[in-house]
Image 1 (cartoon, rainbow, N blue to C red):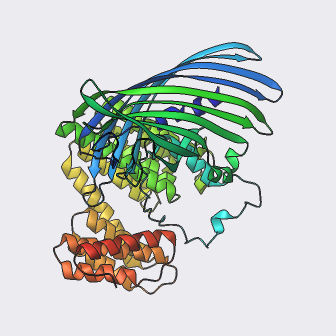
Image 2 (spheres, helix red, strand yellow):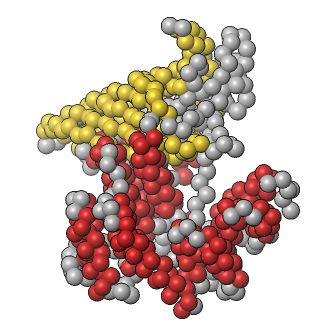
Image 3 (cartoon, rainbow, N blue to C red):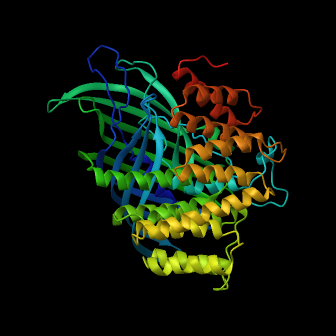
Length: 545
């Protein structure tokens, strides 16, 4: 049964379709570009079939399933400069399955909702994430994460991918557009991930603009594509022995600038030591509604998508614990039940990484209810059951009994959020946030860890005091301590420059961005931040030094 659940991830990644803008004319080249509008919601319905014939341990298994579902694809943010958009896809899918196993016939039916988030550019390609390193971690040596584990433990990167395949939007098969204008009959190639067995299997796609036609007064572009496994995907040890082939057809309404239909057939062949067989997925979907969300609904949807997007960043920076905390906080604020279910599923997916042992997070089966961990667990349970006052009481109990525990900052954040968003107690929320700020101040003043000054600066910024945040970031940057990772200094400089812009001090901000370019940090994260700083300088009217 587990094989079926993993394979269903293909559906969530496959049906995302977005709009395209073009000037269709037969015999002419067409420049295809996506256009995104904040608040636009595209409703899709899809259905399909899934069949599996597998052999494992010398025994055969056959499965037939029918799939159906719907999706709300919402644009929540658009970058005016690049045209890229932050999208949220809330998908609900149901499958009915019949399996022939050595134990006989088995039947089951299951429904699942999940909220995905991600950024796509005007070509439909995934926008690279600028991920801030985890604060507690030392900067890794170059190539360290590529070394094989001597004790044979599973590397955490595949575990991350297993979770993120369920919650992250990528450029999708059939939906990535060519960089140059194309005429009917011309082709282009690209590589995108396609979820299989709970993981993104990279696929090479060759797409062709097959036809531009008019139906019922609308101009439609037909794009056909062939799909094969990418050689890059073979580097993933979990994907060894797996081969994927398939076809895809996408119908784009050029007048409205949206994808209106999509159909795909994918075959996955497996030839591994422990399992052989074939999986075939056929799925099709079409747009059923195009509308603009009202302000209140858009605000809630955007908050949920922003939290999922932030959680994905945290997983990439090896902080799945904080990612789960981020989603737990937003769950206390949501009122839309379907949206809550989607975020809860995203949270469960990331929690699965922790349970599988990555990130050195200890889940104990038997936790002392009076211990810090026990109180945190009790508070989370109460919050999940919407017993808000009880949750706050448990957080406060932890603060009273264990004022020096590592969970104190998290407890203050969670309790303040519940007081403000759920209980409407603004005074209590302000009191708790003041305690958090005092905690940061005390730790920074102690001087034992220079990173506490960095955290204090961030707390001032979150508290709406940019002047103190600026002063504290400058204090942090002036600390001469070799234990501070170079990329952390880069991030502090980036935030400093942004705050100076916010305060209307463009000359100081430009200088801060220029100083960032001179900082000694050669990791990939810092390189991306430096590129953003260059763009900022150019936009402000001065050439990068």
